[in-house]
Amino acid sequence: MKFFSEVFGWMFERYSQFIDNSYFRIITGEVGTHGFNGGIQRRTTDRPGLEMGTNAATLSMDVEEL
Image 1: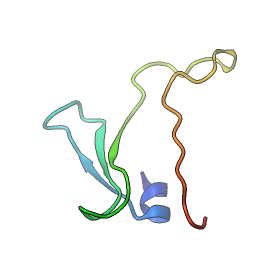
Image 2: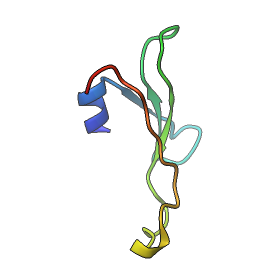
Image 3: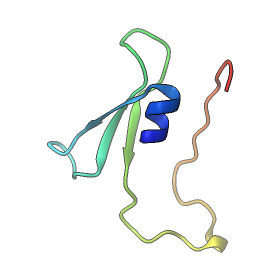
Image 4: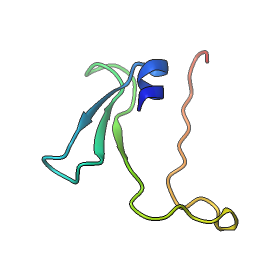
């Protein structure tokens, strides 16, 4: 969350009142502006082995400049 806050200016809102304590809502911009909102949650199981591939969402985004 620190990385995304510093690099992209995203904000994170803890949703512990609705879900468990490790879920955060992601706010990527003001209402009515381009962007995407979502959530992030701590993995609750062991990390998969190297030979198992990815067992989580893999996301990408398009930006004007890194």
